[in-house]
Image (cartoon, rainbow, N blue to C red; front, side, top):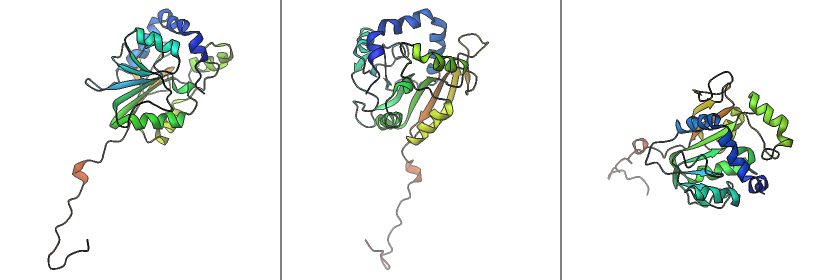
Length: 229
């Protein structure tokens, strides 16, 4: 069952966090933006919330199960489809890329959700997964206080290694990793890799279709010694 109740009740408070922490918000956007494929790539966000990531990143389509959140996203101009990550309302091979930002920690079935993302991506398409690293200082603080949090009470936090393992299980290949919100650094510093920053973005790719160059043309049949049909 989707964990939508806190987001239905506190959608205004969700939006307010970004207004109260503009440097952190911009750092997360920059970490994501650096991994987005260039236009005219067609993308969508899974768990689009109020559109605080999709809209500034130029993404036009989102899926969101919480109607109060979706209403705010629509007011920002996002085309929002009601639905959940485990059953995306799109055909196979429809998008060049997909985005999840802190969505993975609220999913009922992570494996099924990642398989669905894999399904709707074109061969060679990418999935960007942004999340709070549970092994970071911020991740540990979130975990310690989750029972008092409006939003994270029912969340499951992950490490980069755990997310990579689940992506691989769905058929993805990890291409790049970026991190931000690094202790002791300016708020908007973004670096490659993980292990320092609290917010991590993993870019995973759906393998491309087999190259035509690897296909071998059948040998011509010898009329004197024909092979069986």
